[in-house]
Amino acid sequence: MRQAQQRRATQQELIDCHDCGNGVSFSAVACPHCGSTEPSGPAVQSRRELRRLRIEATNDRRLVMVTTLCAGLGTLYGGVMGAGGAASLWAALGYGFVGAVIGVPAAFVINISRSLFD
Image (cartoon, rainbow, N blue to C red; front, side, top):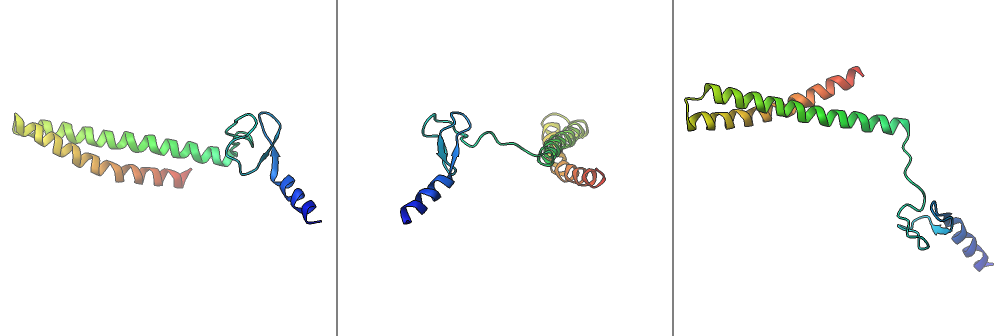
């Protein structure tokens, strides 16, 4: 009786491999028969998950663009307003860094405000 229960529990834990169709443990990392790394099949994402991933990708691009823009404007300002020579170079680097530091929170605020209205 006990062996039958264990056999049933083992059979319930097995699933058919997506690639070869043989039985494989649900918790297996790879199919022992064919070596498939996704024995339960490829991950299928819902519409909601796909939408969330698209929004995150858009927010990441916006963060990089705004930060780069602010750093570029700071560099340009520092280069133009510097005293000349090495002083202009140091001013450009300093203002570029300040622009990048300002750009990150600015992009964050833009991302948050856009998500409120979407």
